[in-house]
Image 1: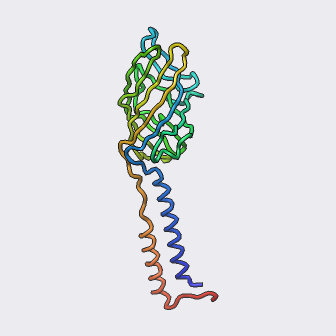
Image 2 (image 1 turned 135 degrees about the vertical axis):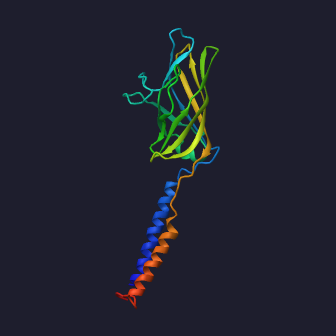
Image 3 (image 1 turned 45 degrees about the vertical axis):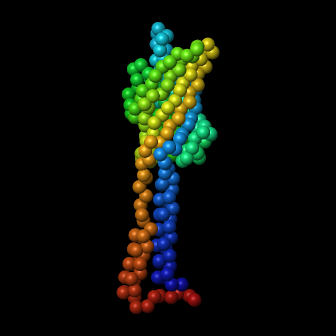
Length: 220
């Protein structure tokens, strides 16, 4: 068994492993136009005069925009209309934080959406329009922006939300659907370790040759 050969193979194996880790780190390589669509239910609380919505409660009747109170987080489901890098998340369940409309919840809202353990969305800008239509109150997301983050909290893409919440004033049932379109993809740095490690392997072998005229052979 040749130690030089095995030493080089070990370096290459280490480099290949590092390369695989780099590919894993770049799994969220979003492209502009990738679309995440999700749906949810909400309870709309109105101002005392009943003319406009006051808060959107996505949780279990516990309004808490910080999402720290028990049962205050609502649930979302990623729909089949998600595209691109979001396709693997179709039918996954995540969480959403409550929103105050009047006054508006201050932004940024960290982890406004927790789409999956390895993907979240911070709300960085928030605006909306309200339109009563045929026995319903519609709340339209307008100019809502945010940042996608990976499990390490690293920003990996920017997006804009368009969405609509429909509150049926007769039945009291409400539903929400939202779409986030990637507007800017942020490259995830991936270390180029392979060439460097292989170069280090060659350098180590050269030094070993300089110190040992002949390679040690063990066995056949």
